[in-house]
Amino acid sequence: MDLLSVRLTINYKDKPPVLDELCLDLRPGEVLGLVGHSGCGKSSLALAILGLLNLKGGKARGSILWDGHELLALKEKEWRKLRGKVISFVPQSPMSALNPALRLGTQMNEAWKLHGHGGSDHMEESVFQALRDVGLPPNEEFLRRYPSEISVGQAQRVLIGMAIMHRPALLIADEPTSALDAVTQAEILALFGELNRKLGMSMLFISHDLVSAYGLCHRIALINAGKIVECNTPQAIFFSPQQPFTKKLIAALPTVPSPAEVEQALRYNTF
Image (cartoon, rainbow, N blue to C red; front, side):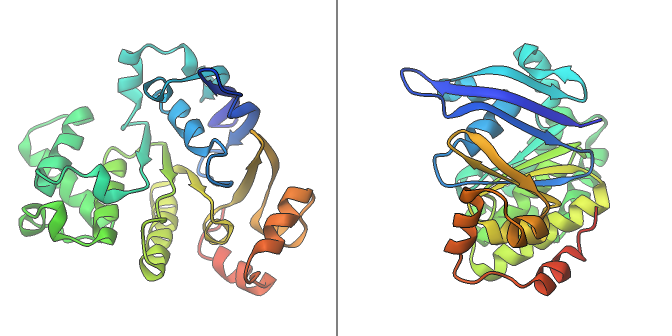
């Protein structure tokens, strides 16, 4: 049974639909890449799955089935029980997402309090474990820092740590590497793969970068004109594309990885 099944049309007031009967399924434990150009509706889909689309003035019609339950029928009170605990989110710009006036520890503690239970000792251990999970120092000295005192890559790791603190079943990552340099980008992609294997959580990896998706994702779904035009394994997308849009994307790449390079990358993220 699919963990997530989406059949969705999304539009904004007085504008044509940004997603037009888009169909997408996500399996338990799977990393699914959603790749498309800027403005194609990728982030709108993420907001709809998180129950936040209305904050941007969008309207969703159709169905979002989560483990067989219809999410579009939920009240905000019910959404709050899911959002951040069962379905979590990593945004694009870490420095914009973190509050510059609050220490890192304060922000991580607040993330824990949304769904955590127990005393201060339990909270401290949960925060330290989240830091260990994302490769950051699990100590008070690091938590006393402000966002301006850490690198962009560390800030993204903090946000990922906050997102996985409650061990969600699904992590949605919306362009999570676009603000990073090439080396840090590779490190964050490797971290996502490690967390998928370690925690067994599903991931929806949203990106405009097809190459970033091929080494991380078990399947890649390509979106164009409001629909999924092709969804397949990275090997099939790169070396046996079926649709004209997919072939155009592959042809536009500066370099296309060889089958051996794809196999080497996928070796670290089996499904």
